[in-house]
Structure formats: C-alpha cells, structure tokens
Amino acid sequence: MPKSGDVIIARMQFTDSSDAKVRPALVLFEELGNVVIAGITTNLKMKGIPITVKDGAAQESILKLNYILTITNETIVKTVFHLNPEKKHLVFEELTNRLQGLRS
Image 1 (spheres, rainbow, N blue to C red):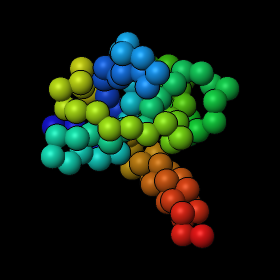
Image 2: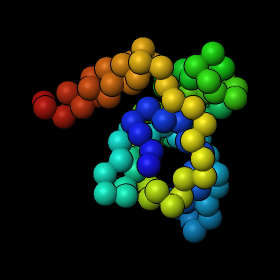
Image 3: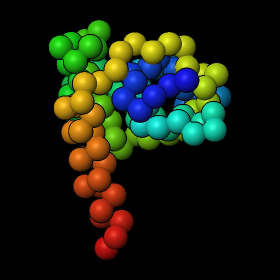
C-alpha cells in the first residue's frame, strides 16, 4: 500500500492517447485503492520542487505540482524511496499556497 511521501514508478496513461509510459511520481495520498500522485520529470528546465540524488532520486529531477492525477494501486510498478520530512513539508507548503488561491 503506497504512503504519502513515497516516490514510485507507475504506468501512466497519456491524456491525449491510449498509450502508457512508466514514469516516476510522488504519492500525495491513497484512499480506497485510488492513489493521488504528482508527476516527476528529469527536465530540469521545468518549474517545480527539486528532487535530488541526495533525496534518493536516481538523477536530479523536478516534482511537478501542476501535474496531479489519480491512478490505481495496480499501476504502481514499485516504490523507489520515501521523501525526507523536510522535503515533504516543502511539498505540503507549496500545495497549501496553491490551494489558498481557490479561496479568492
């Protein structure tokens, strides 16, 4: 069962086709077999939160909080590592800041 803060590898379907690709992602939360994730990319030119080799990533990456989707437990290939508490707090703060814009 995935936990909040797990960095996973999952099969993700593209929104514009029926193709799927294996990609890294951060588990935000899991409920009733649905796993809400944020995508991770190695394209360092993208905006987001850096995930470093020191954090546990295979290579320097960016957590994209503008790319959030829901997958099922069955699409998870494996768990790679778990974010440290400081990085999890940074993700929480950034998500909170973005969601506060919904109040306006």
